[in-house]
Image 1 (cartoon, rainbow over the protein chains, first blue to last red):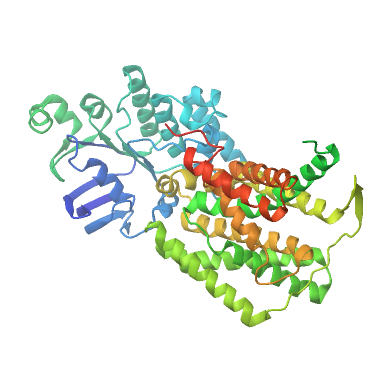
Image 2: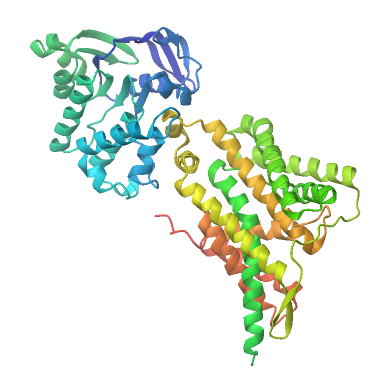
Length: 235
Length: 290
């Protein structure tokens, strides 16, 4: 469904992606592991058109995404949860959700049921719906960021380090929500540093180093044999 | 020194009325700055074009309200066109480039107006005449009407920004342009709409002023200058701050004119500006950033 083929990208003059190739099938959860600064987040940003791919192909359902305006991607079914969450801090929780919900072609009933769904899974967002997004705790902001992406009813979510800086209980909740989305058939491209979580929720895992994919294996294989993990991630 | 109470009350009414008018001019300016980081030096010229457009409509229809509505729409569309053609290509560049672009636009509009309409003034008659007695003064109803209409337009803008989908899009875009586009918000269109709203508000101010001063190339020039002052004093891009600053500065000027001539009282706003820039450069009505 989402396919990157030999994607190169530059930040100013530094060459940050050196031919990344990644595939995500419909409804598949795919992990993208690697140390800090190997280009995992840049890979997601390149898909979103926030960093320009200088060469290579990025396609979604066979349609090229290269050069497409970022704001046209959600309509195709692509949602993005960035690593720093990027909650609209001065908007209330509900207004944050409305940025994804107030789309053309969403009926009032559909809106209500979508809201009801995220409130059911994240009760804290219901409690705080009239509170400014910036006043939420880190974990709550992460939930809001994911909930906001869910408002778009995406077919794939690009999820960038959702557990970064969260306490273990919150990590468990993030895992539950990934599994829930997976159960609903939403594909996820999960960028993480948390190896156990990634191996637990993903079907396949790519490992990046220095702007390129160095290893690609089913998660079950990596769970059984962690030599590769040691080699690339040192954990 | 004793100032009679009635004089103080008259100056309070004066200050509030001109404060609301100033707020209308300033809110269009601050909206555009807050959302696009564009200091629109053509704001006063859009106001003037709005007044001329209004006077044209008034001349043919004789209807003040038609003049107001048509001017707002025409100048709003023109504003969107300016944004798309002249400012959109400059997005993300140094703020100086947009300042130069709007300044250039200002020169073009001014000279176009001079060429098109010539130097003599045109008139729009106020929709309501009459005056009422305010202590020792015959106070025109129309001035009160302008203040109320300005308040209504600003209130409408506030409701639109607070509850409307487009308002949420605009505020989201202001806070994080990149994330807004990742949520599917059509950021380029939002920018054009914001510029259209700002331009439309300038045009509304122009038509509302026209009965007071007549339509000339310099209509609203002093209000525009003071609008820049209050936008800075209120905190660049802070709508509520600009409105408060408009009323605050206008009241100060009114009270100052009890002691000095009104022409000298104008100095007050610049004194406030200088003091603000010295001690609270982010604006009087925003919390000091930590």
